[in-house]
Image 1 (cartoon, rainbow, N blue to C red):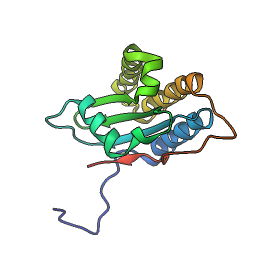
Image 2: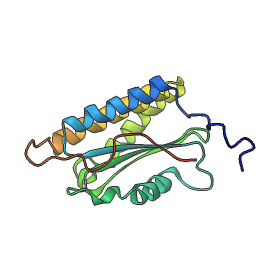
Image 3: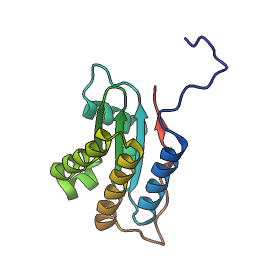
Length: 153
């Protein structure tokens, strides 16, 4: 229950970080027929971050991309948890080591409190992998999922 319902909830990112992340998503998706989404919430209590990422992935119907090549970047800021969940099409191409490496690189930025930059760099790396394995096809490519950041609670 909100005490002052007319007040907007405080954003988890400033405008500059939000623009940086959305720009990275759009740039990544211009070069591939894969899809990238970012989901940010404050808490991930009582659940493993990867399990929560999978739950959100399927709630957002990201498995419905034609080539099963969607990737979700999941962050729970206040609980200091994150995960990257790739659908079966891209996961078969890059494997678990790839996901673990980009999560570790994102953590380096997060440890310096560079959240927007860390997420944007992660999205760019995902875009590079998607471009390698699922390049943009001018005649058939379409943006299957929205590019904005999805904010949870």
